[in-house]
Length: 495
Image (tube, rainbow, N blue to C red; front, side):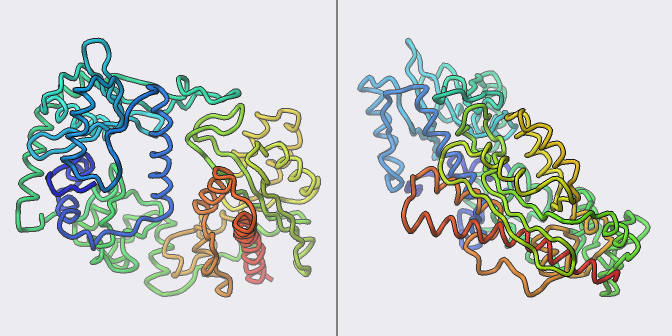
């Protein structure tokens, strides 16, 4: 939508509420914005899907927004025309007051009054949602529409799908009218403050702080944080952001400047490693980890989706659903691993086939090596609840699991280039530099989830389907092969 005729919209109002500098940069220096990554895009896509689905709560409405290129005044005029012509349900109704625009998801004429409904893809009401809707309520009321009430519509995380999706049970509704009226003065003041910022010729002088991450990660992070050096206090693992910012405000930016008496034992290992540029390898602890492993070893990794809209019977919104696994089996350290894999082949619920295949390949003896054991264990426990006839086998699998993340989380093995992280994507190139996710079409879990949802949600067939499936298999296979190679490196350190 062409926004040239207004100073503020709902999104820029929320941006200003988070940070005035971000508001200014977004208006005058969009070129400084960080590119949208796949995880953010997935959030936007989910919001769109949920918003479209919520329209079923009020069917038969008319959309006042003809498209993204429709200019502001035409959208407002179309909304007014629909209201005047007696349309009872309007989607994307647009209103303006004193250069402030808002577009509300659903506007309903109920009896003698109008009610507005703003749809959120979250499963709870957050403070930022209340601020968001307070702004909308204020603009709609001040524009002259006799708005009687405004509601937030959000996901009911307790909804369990049985059969066809029931949107009346999927969504909760709650009136925010009272809170909106309580916030009127705050909204008025904020609007005036933000207009002043946008009418200024100077960028607001606002230093980095918690507003860079709350309530959302700011998309000017790269620009505003460009002065922070590598190996800074912000890289310290296990330290609260509030504490890191306190150090920064006190002029302590580099790891080498930190008072070693103020950090934990694990943080001290990281700091000293960077100061000396030496690795820290606790051979005794690594040996203990390796000695406790029982062969054959099964290196396992899952990929999951967690859709806002439950796809299968007996699933809830945002429930993690495994759709793929990769498994490398190592009989001993002198052999090459064997590989097995599973990838759901349709949009049907594949959880039972997933667990049957996994039980078959994991056999009954030997440890199961995972990276971040709590994730895989939680998914397995959920499958056992959904399919209780496999409960004993699943519990046996969980009891055999060993977490390869442990030696890195505890810094039994730490190198300066890990920069405080023990993520697999960081540990792998540090220990096995010849292995990399670079060049893969799918290179992280978020991409894998998005690719699978795209595959099953659009009935993709033929060459495109084969290509996406191959990309998914290649990525997940690398994850478990990475675990094999990392363990080999650890083993060489103590042999």
